[in-house]
Amino acid sequence: MAYLHWSSDLDTGIDVIDGQHKRIVDYLNELNEANDKGDRQATNHVLNELVDYTLTHFAFEEELQEKAGYPFVRAHKRVHDIFTKRVAEFQKRAAAGDDVAPELLSMLKIWLVNHIKGDDADYAESVRKMLGVEGMEGKVAGGWLGVALKRFFG
Image (cartoon, rainbow, N blue to C red):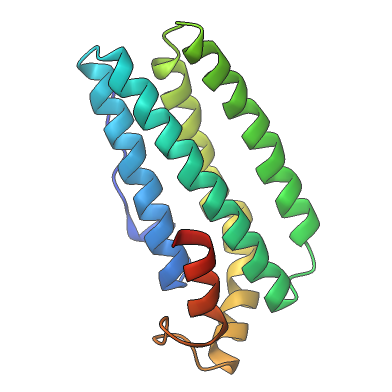
């Protein structure tokens, strides 16, 4: 299966979010590699890492949207929740011994690109405005953004 490559059309213009999205793409490519090697144990391990990171990213993204006053944060959260349930089903199947990687990878690649270009692009302006107003574009270490990053990502 083809690897997913980051392209500028996936940029939201929010460095911290783009960095997280790039990490998710890296996880997808690691999952792809483990699957190509036929290593079921590595595939399941990367799948679990991908899910853990993505859930943290979703929570962080939703808090950013709330802080920015994005009016459709509830709808965005519902999209995340539906996706999370779909992936949980894949995790259950994988834990039961099913080879879910090819089907999962296909779904994840399509979903991620569509989600970033659609749902995430919709909130990006609100968040960029909020970060700009608070003067935190480059100041991740301090202020609300730094505290939130530390809380979600350690």
